[in-house]
Structure formats: C-alpha cells, structure tokens
Length: 230
Image (cartoon, rainbow, N blue to C red; front, side, top):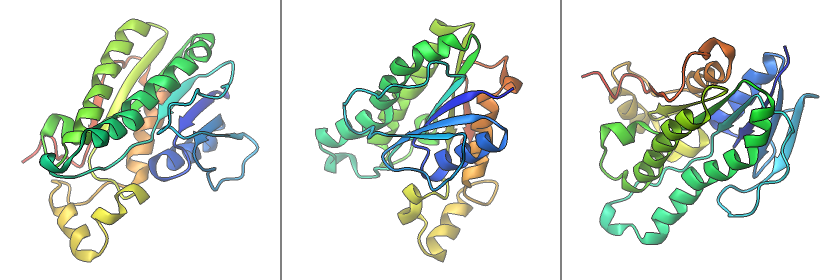
C-alpha cells in the first residue's frame, strides 16, 4: 500500500538517501528542506523551509504515515571557545526544529491511524567525546524527546531515534577530507570503516515501516560498533 512520508532535510546525505529508499518502495514523499533534492519523481513533493529559523512550518499533507527529521550540525570545538550563541544555534536546528515539525505533523500522523517518527541523535550522547559538548547537548534533548513522545503518543504513533557515528555525507566532508583523515576515522570504529548514507537510511526506512511495528521509544546505535565494542 502506498503511504505518504515527510522527510525533513531530504536534499542531501542521509535524508536524500532515505527519500530514494521510500520512493523505490512505492511511497509518496514530501521533502521539506532549504534546497530541493536532485530527484525527479511524480511522487516527490518539495517544500522550501529553513529549520535553523523559527518561522512557522508550511502546510503539510493531511495524512502522514511517517516523519523523519534529518537536519543536523557538526560543531566540534573546545568548550571554552563556544559562546552561548553556538549552543543556541545547534539547539535550534537539531532539537527545536524537530519539535516544530512534529507539532505541525501531529494532525496528519493521527489521521493515518498507525504512523511512525524517526529522529536523529549521535553516538556522542551516550559515548562522551571531547569537543562535542554543543552537539551532544542538543542531540541529548532529541533522545529525551524520543522517549517522552513515544510514551505520550502510544499506541498509534511510534517514535524512535537513530544515533549514528561519523557518516560520509557533505556535512562531515571536512572531517574526512584526504586519505589520512579518512583512514584514521575508519580505524576508530571496530568495523573498520565510517558509515555510508545507506547504512543509516535503510535503518530509518525500517523504523518508518510496518516491519518495526513493535518498536517504540528506542535509540538505535548504528555506529560501526563504536558505542559498545572495544
């Protein structure tokens, strides 16, 4: 059965791969992002919106079977060099943007009777990593939001999150530019490589679909083993 999904930040990286996956499964997708994805498909709809702003969310479909909030930032700096504005900027994009989208989506999620939400955290929340204080704080809020909404919206709306490690996307390009940086990043992971967009997007599609129908309130570590293996 064709379903309708909303993917925020679906023009690049993991979000774009998720859009491809959902379209290939025969679903309709509304992509809401600053720029349009480089995809031409009759079942793809685009809404221009900047989640780093506090502007109201434009009108969304009346029936929504699933929402994925993919926008994020990688702001790695020493704590002493971070200003309050840096924390506010990361929190606005990573946490409050998700809140605004979910509030705007709730009527459509309820109309679908059975629906699913996927949010994104980071391995740095549970693991504890130097220079990650701003992004880990914002994504820690996402994990709390995931569990709270999973309880509040059960049983008809499921809410889960994915906590990736480093993934090869435009957002992380400066961290893995050059062979030496890429090799060093890969060696930090027990599975010997960094993530690819499909590694994460396939998990997101699973959480949005009926195959994960008995899962809610979970934070999945899709991180090459970094959070649990030594």
